[in-house]
Image (cartoon, rainbow over all chains, first blue to last red):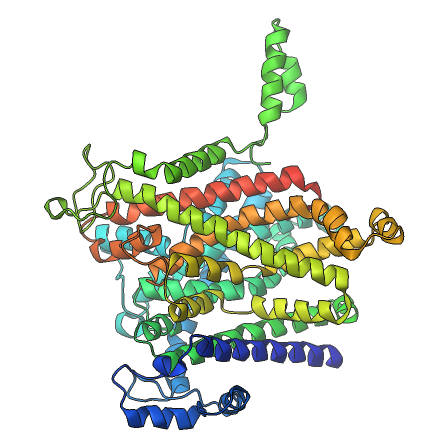
Length: 310
Length: 299
């Protein structure tokens, strides 16, 4: 087990190294990294200061060493836009809003997806099941931002029930509903499909027939015994979906003016604040890598076959 | 599956006297069983619309018309007009061009890159395989849209850059799946015998591996077109995709946000177009998978 964890973390580090290499390479490939790292009205002194800080007058390999040293020390550079605040600092200040949004969306999609999937599986080929299937197909075909705009159209414009833009600090929990549903909707379909199919398998298994034969009420058979075993694939799906969740957050935060990391990224790109962009991309990648490692390790712990094979 | 007709026994029992007619009908039905007619029809319409856009579109999709801004749907403007007075129907028709061009070309890029990496990985094996698969893993854990947005902004938004970026960030599925398939083929007797008989690696790849992965490739790439269409729309929605005034559906939705209180038709119609296109591609892909690749039916 220990060896497996070490190996997996090693792979994660290699991944992160490739990410930094890509960031480093891309900024230099565009020709003049200074034009991306400095505001257009930078003075000559600013330029020289920057050249010294990043070692831009040195050969490429030395620049790369400086770049890696800075990253290892957590120095991503100063943000151009936020009064020269540290880029890492700016990123961290936006993180809570994104966590609120993504966690709520995930909880929403899990509850709705699992319940719909389980009911579909216990009533196969009924009207409910068919509607569920159609919803799943529709859910996977609608772009996140369109779902968001439609929800705004319905609940803000026509019904006037919920606010459409802001963030939790300004609007309270009420402002969280539409963004979370928008982002969660993306995964409702996925969760529903996987719960339905694994639930159908579970209901067919011998131990379920056994429990049923013992005279256990159907409600308990379904919601306790079958669902428990059918919910394992959801965790695999979670790891796969995590990168998609972050992409979805970028779009959702833009639609609802949600003050999170995704919106920070898009805003920073438009004002060419590339130090912040670097920090956001780097930490989002690190987050995905970390989640993947955690899920893999948890899996290996649950299923010894993976440890041996992997 | 989704479109299962009545089963054989009921059909036979219900057959009345005119057996000849019924059996013809039955034969047609059995051929069509499971074929996503609606999806194929919509795809045909979308492709035709994209190709013949200049002939079909009632108005110029880019020309402003200050007299008719934010006009609701009417017989004159079937889907209404936007804030600059441009006809939304015409823009939706021209938008199909961008979506389909980006969709197909991006998938061509990612399919070609992924297949190349997969085949090299599976045939050469050893450390080359290890390195290539590590790189594939690394790409898989990238925050995909974030990287796409950043790279497009660095390279400058243009149709070609959008295609390249979407294509080069999407090859991992192909690399993974096709490598597995190719490894399995390499172990099979006919490939081993060809190898023993003196076929070069290149010949093995060309004559034995590639023809046998075409089906998988076709299924994967069909489903991937849908993802590429959504990604293009997302990039354009964020303002970092196809540059204005080109009528991308994503750009149209982005512009509609400002007018959501005044003009419901601005967000609704382009969104319906994306959803129908993506749904048709997905359903066609599912159907192809069932037809071409029976072993993966439950995936």
